[in-house]
Image 1 (cartoon, one colour):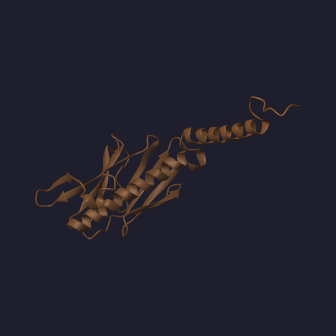
Image 2: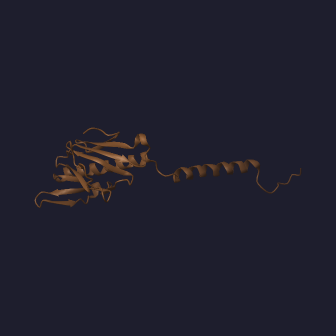
Length: 181
């Protein structure tokens, strides 16, 4: 063998490049994989809690009741302030204090509501409602709410879940299966 360097790559260099490409491919595959049903559910609960908390803060700040308004046809949830003087509901535009909180939450496509209990009464009844809501008072207390939700994309054992609102913190807690109100 002569003392000159041969053109090309060494075996070690090729192995290192192949390992780097394999790591990059693994990262891409994981990031392109669709979100699982449980991740979508947890994201929805997180966004809903953020919206409910915004309603609580806005109610405390204005000393006026606010309602968290579910529109099942549009699959959206928003907060509205209650104007007692005019007996009207107005959509809330948040100030800079609440700008990091969403004004609108989208209900996941695979989620359908089986029951919407407010203060122990099922607002949905036998018919499918177009909308439902609960109130947060000017003192920051929310009505007692239990939501029964069915996840059409989930596996059979995790298809049904409940969201139970803590009236003091205006935060929902997630439970597997349907919880009695």
